[in-house]
Image (cartoon, rainbow, N blue to C red; front, side, top):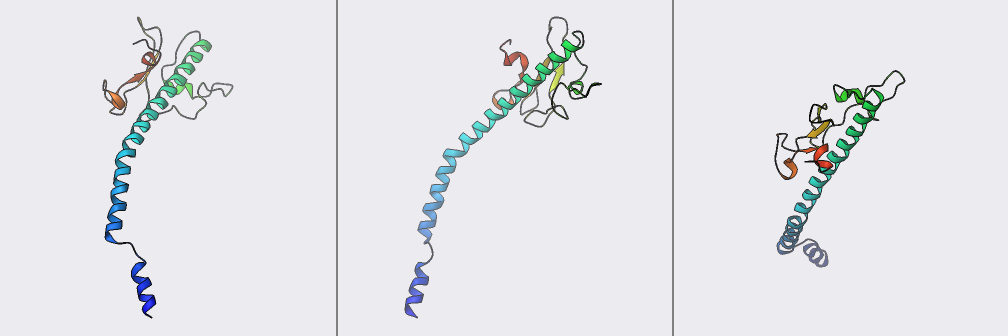
Length: 143
């Protein structure tokens, strides 16, 4: 009976051991979490860049098939034509990584190309970092 009680007393962790483990986990978290969040932000920007590039390519294809005329809205890119063809191989227009629809401006005098953009995480013009605006002109280095 005495042996069983000695084994039972040694079966758990001491408070000091638990505190050491908690401190180690805390240190690891302070080193890892900022890097993970930075990579997550970079991934969101990369997704927006790919989406915008795909939409612009679909807009240009639409214009080539419609005598140089661009659509009034991005919805035309996912709406099947008489043959069932869509310019974007999706059921709906993609949203930016922050859940908002991409903005679209048709070509106009002084701007011969359409503009497709997102306002970034903060959804307001301007900003820096994850809040910065992304459009097809900045992607290709025009602005």
